[in-house]
Amino acid sequence: MRTRKNRTHNGRLLKAKRAYSFADIAEKLETHVRTVQVWHKEGLKILEDHTRPFLVMGQDLRDFLKARLRSRKKPLKIGEFYCPRCREPRRSRPDRLAAQATQRRLGKTHKQVLLRGVCEVCDQSLLLFSSDRKAAEWTKNGLIFTEPLEVINGSGISSVKTDILKGRENAKSKRQK
Ligand SMILES: [Zn+2]
Image (spheres, rainbow, N blue to C red):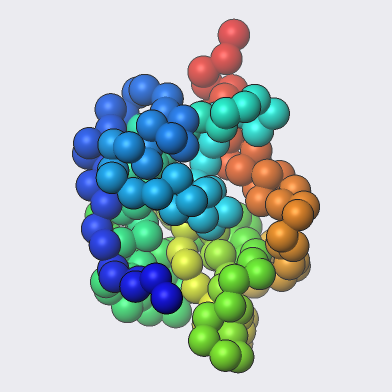
């Protein structure tokens, strides 16, 4: 079995404003390209979902790795995300809070859920790796997710893509034409 060490990947090895293929990223971070594919499934943003190979902006990867690391390190309170821009635990704007179940199992009984939001202080998009159990706690505490807990099945990751596209809308409208 493959050992699952909690490796820290240094996103700073990547230039913020450059686009990288998964292979580039794997090489730079000395990891397997499959790891990068997993990150993609976990919510790592790609530039255009219809181009091959997929391209990832260095900054997006940095943000992703930071959020990932943070979600492992520091237990956040119910309703809190780690905001990479504020560098603080923050709550999401309530109307932008979304939960998304993945097929990934956590232990024997739980499934991974991605919680997403938008920082109520700085508007940074937020991502939290969580579980169906935790998401239920959020709901119990009065937090309402704008999207139902939809399951991402192995083949059609369309819900992920939709979500990525949604997340990119803001960035795009600024950047394009
Ligand atoms: Zn913030």
